[in-house]
Length: 179
Image (cartoon, rainbow, N blue to C red; front, side, top):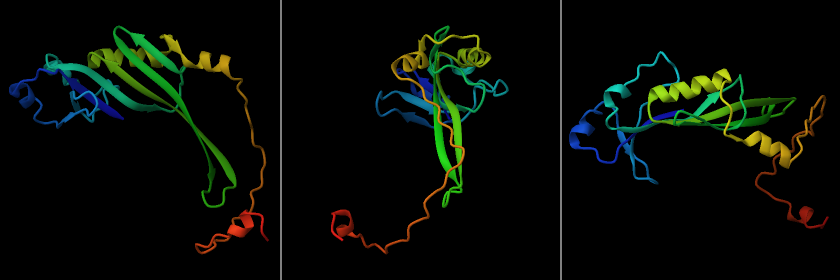
């Protein structure tokens, strides 16, 4: 997770000195200065240092925050000037990795939030997790109308035995129809 304070463009040297405990970075795309705080502002127990710095902070962002349960609809949510984007990810893999005998499926949602303050950031996240916000852009509704969803369940399967290494040799004739 990446939590940043985006700084106003007209910072003075005195303003920069107020951030002496943080490194100031510059975004290569927007050329705007930001601070990667390394703090979890979605946790209400985390102190909010932005109150003292509100005059020089333009926005607060959280990127790639992961939730593993209590999923909500994929899309864009808005609340009092804050914007939250959520997208579901899925990974299917075999275990053990060398000779898989079982298929595992991992599902999580990744959330990004952009707000004017930590308080607004916490507010939209809280309402989102409670389920009291509806998306302004519902990506799932659009996806379901475009493509049918198929559910596949693998009950039992057998894998081919692993092939022997060829010590860097590649049998070109075998793949070009020559025996």
